[in-house]
Image (cartoon, rainbow, N blue to C red; front, side, top):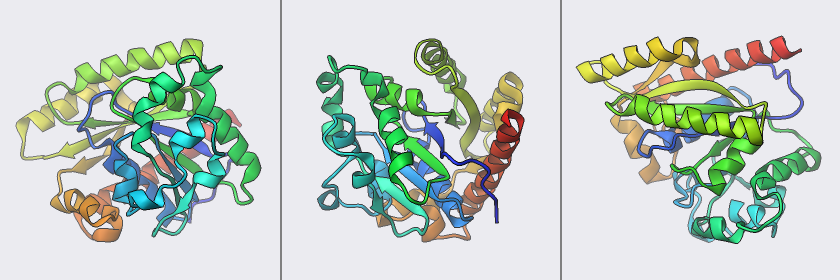
Amino acid sequence: MFETTHLNPRILAVVNQKGGVGKTTTTINLATALAAIGQKTLILDIDPQGNASTGLGIGHEQRTKTTYDVLVGEEVLSDAILPTAVPNLGLAPAHYDLAGAELELANAPRRSYRMKQALDRLSDDTVVPYDYVLIDCPPSLNVLTVNALTAADALLVPLQCEFFALEGLSQLLRTVELVRSSLNPRLIIQGIVLTMYDSRNNLARQVSADVRSHFGDLVYETMIPRNVRISEAPGFGKPALIYDHSCVGSKAYMKLASELIKREQIKIGALA
């Protein structure tokens, strides 16, 4: 069992401005893996598509209070959190109304800090504090993503092993620098996770080598393979680790969770 050395949760925004990189899949399965090794974990679904909510078996009829309500100030975050079928894992679900949040918050005071304020209050409201909060961001730079980056301690970046991977990542890094300079100076990149990796594919191997050459230790040793069981699991409203805990994808996410915690312990120890 891993020991937690921090009182407030570590807030990780799972983000990539490019869609189809395994962002939601990584959020769901990494959170499940963290919960499985005893870390009390919360997912904030702020993608209007609500795929993280659906992938955890939370139907639209259950989403009576959502992250949309929290961001527009109609609900506190603690009231929007639902239990999931995974012990130690909670979810604040998304609603398609999030698509209109950009306009609704356009003239709101401190609009980029709405999620940070909600999470600060959650730490006060929660009897048993969370160890980790993972924010599943939309695949674009909008007020929702900026809220996540402003609230987060660090970014976790899923990166698909394909031709345009580095181009999309460079755009994200520029965004991070802008947020760090104006909204959240403590923001760091926790790590880059290579997803949908197929060792039989020459391009995937080349992309992996290029990313590691450019970003060194920021890139996790663990790579998430292409795996049909991972793809099937959301259709059953389950994380892959629940759907088939013995498949290669599930094992990869368990390994990733272990590697993430070790990184976090090193960072927290250095800060202490």
